[in-house]
Length: 257
Length: 175
Image 1 (cartoon, chains in turn red, green):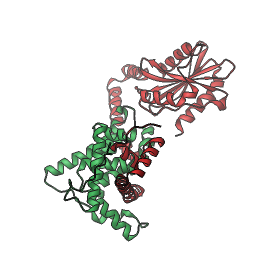
Image 2 (cartoon, each protein chain N blue to C red; image 1 turned 90 degrees about the horizontal axis):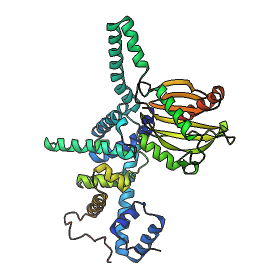
Image 3 (cartoon, rainbow over the protein chains, first blue to last red; image 1 turned 180 degrees about the horizontal axis):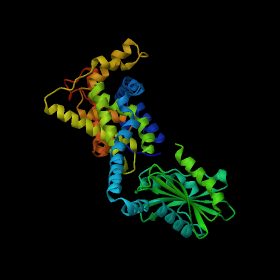
Image 4 (cartoon, chains in turn purple, orange; image 1 turned 90 degrees about the vertical axis):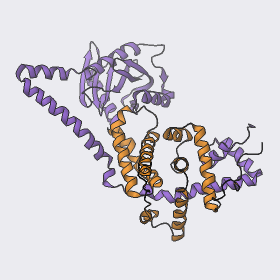
């Protein structure tokens, strides 16, 4: 039982129902003993109820056409994308032949693209998957904390794929450094010593959207793809044919929001 | 941009409500929301994590303040759209409609900074910290503005607003 005096801020927080239950009870008890203050608080509460009731119907009105967000996004992204395409086309036309081929080459090997992401995921796998002491920094029970952390650092909402349907249990994850900024790494285990790593980070290159592509290096490999500016890579030591359905599952879950 | 659509689209109705409560004119309010959404689309990738709701309300609020300043500079009064108050809907009785209109008219008499705090906290359920972020002031300022807004609105409701200092019952406990 605390004995902190009731302050004005507590009375407003009481009206706005944002106090901890204990404090809420203390304020209620105080109001019981102080009818003058209780009258003011009741007046503030009825103001709040009245304002909410008066304004609530606005949020139920159908949205006018000019507030269609999908259209606003489309109008906005169309211009720069078309301008880039037009510029690339002009460049190819003006150079032509062999010159054009060289330009195409540099566009494909974009820094920070899919190939780089696959290499980064493989490096993370090679470092963290064999680790028996601390393979992950945040363990599965604290998953909410991990999601908050990596979402904050990646500046976008990151979801943790659930691979229990594929026989892999989430161990946890961590934020890892890549040469293209922070990435979120999640690690899974099949309880028979086989581990998987899913690495995801924003794509700052042309590969904002890219189909699923197999990548492997020695006997470590998996798949890499990009959806809506976020790149994903699933890496393990298992055979590619057994990893592909798991990669499909990761992609399906990431897309389903 | 898909994540933006998913996170922002559900918030458009509440952005409209806040804009309408601030400017009280449907067309002007929707113009503000449209400007807000266009800005949000162009700045989405530069957003520094955090709360999308507070971020959007901050953009909208700053646009509304700019508009208030511009119309004040032009000496033009922001028109109040009485005819558009049919938004109270058919569910409300005539008596309720009058009460709703009355409280909104009284709210409109509050200084803009007090009105904004009251709307963000009491209607839009922003935390005090998020409201502070939207208005660009410390939380302490939010609390004192909220207190003044509620006192002032209560005076308007009780019809004692012309003598503001004499009829105020202080909220401080006697400790």
